[in-house]
Length: 323
Image (cartoon, rainbow, N blue to C red; front, side):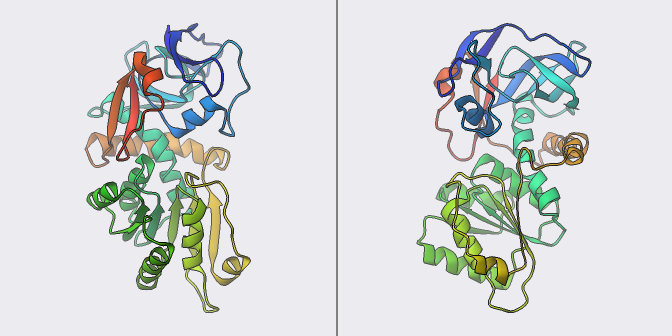
């Protein structure tokens, strides 16, 4: 079969022939792959930088962690891969499959799960979002950030504040449900002052952070209390596009009712992952099929994988490989 194969970590995936995977137990099934979204997770695994990366395989390995595909009986579904998924065939887990509704195309369905996991899981399980709350999304101009806006609105957020550096994309987030935008291209003092004004008028209940780094330090400084009673803020780290470490003053932790947590592979419980596949993803696929959830996609063919792997995808689009 044809597949996107990495022979040495750090190198670009090659369009190459690779042995078709073989079903080895009752929890596995073979699908014909139709579409796979290229995510930061996939890139991190391919480069060896992600904490879930496998050991080096001298025979190469197929990249891709999930897929939209078709069973032998014609059932169209989304599933997590056991083998790499950017290939004509892939082994997937029977326990982590979702049958797709009518009205959603393969490319759209492929883009949703990673972004839903990176937003809905944080909002629902780490932040425990309740209707009427105020949500700040740090780094909302990316694909997952755009999804987080729409899902937070769906979950009943009263007010959504978004940050980012791409001015054009920031403005477009108002159409997705954002209420206020904060440009990270401003000077630090201006960012702090704008966020303080927002926090005073409408206390921030939840922060979903895709950036970490300096912007996280600024937001946490805004939340710092002055000795009075403070509203509880649930701060959830999902990504670290701006740096993996921060300086955190102990005074901030002591001065505010702050819950600091992370959301990602390894932090979710087995029950939460079960709910992702049994409730959350089916609901989000249905919303997308009705055009309630909107996605921004750029499509490429499998044969162009090496050329497109590191292509710059602007305006929060997600790259989808069509097989």
